[in-house]
Length: 547
Ligand code: TEU
Image (cartoon, rainbow, N blue to C red):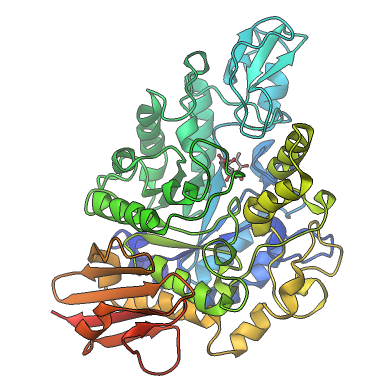
């Protein structure tokens, strides 16, 4: 362990931390097969160190048939050959440690791959010791146990003729759900986690963790009655034996539920990813593909409600992006004329709030959504299933493509843009998914040289968080809550007050706060020159004053 990490251990290190997410298939290829790998990540650790992040969450690299890009695991205790070997993984942990960076593994505990040994055994017979590792119902071919649907389309039940039974899957049929009611399943999982902890892993992100305590007969998928009982046991048996960061993915979390997950006594997790703010730009009660404009005032109020509710009672994660979400600059900023300004504004607004910020690979460059002309260029199972379902249901192709351009998960999954070299320096081979054609302009090489780049702005934000404790501890207060353009808030601790003031639109607007704060010091600003009393398109400033 490096001194860097040892020092952090004195307190809850993850409250000061900034986390970077790597989608390993798309980060850096080292062997020319067109798929990113562990040796590629190792070769970029100095870049991450320069950026200043404390931990790296890597999407799953375990053995997997890749029906859902690794979120379908066939062996939790080995690395998929596509990504490298266990010894590469050990080296990654060691090399990261030398740079003061911890590795966060992605745990998919709700389901396995149908190629996992447990499932292959489970299918052999009702009396096989592994049968009860999964969720089965007797039945008749063609008559589903109930009408529950899978997230990636179709019924949540899959027929196995040899057994005369259906198994339950909340995602693809190749992702059978584990039966958490079975204590043997839970023990296997804990042992596996302890095994990774022994290898030096610094934390875990827990995939769809709110869906493990399902009760399909009652139509319950998330927030099942036994959820928090399971989580407390999980945490006690594993995480609490280390000084880890743990973050659960919980689409169904409310502020009340999040207080349980992230209780300061550490009985469950450090924090959760909640998605309330991420579901605002879709039509009520419909799917994410059914687009609606962002209700800006609601966005502010939603974020503010989470800030208030968890203050000293839990802990927030802060994110705009991940491997399932479209690129934020295309989504709520402007990926044309104001790309740089709006990417910086979104960054400052997010990093100024209380919580642990997560940066998704390429976000620090202001990477944008992609528009492939044809569905054959898309790789994501959710996107392609939806396309064919909707085309069959009679939707116009142009409308379906419009939804894909706005919301497809592949927007986030195009390769990391390192340089102007062919394929953005991501691979010397043919990338598994095409590179965004804008890589010649948006890439690491250019942005490292440019003092005004989005990348340099992110570096400064990360540095400021380390310098000013008010970023970590200050109480949040939303200002001008009804304003249709300005997102402004203060953060206040015993001796410092900080103002984050942003124009979320491309109109120039006057801002009363700027005069009031006239004498305060500027911590960061995304326009050159002096601050006026107006905010230019996507202008953002963070000011600080002593109290
Ligand atoms: O995502 C959880 C989840 O519910 C997503 O399917 C979400 O609904 C969708 O991405 C919205 O577009 C997690 C992982 O992050 C995702 O990559 C996996 O596909 C999924 O679990 C299944 O493991």
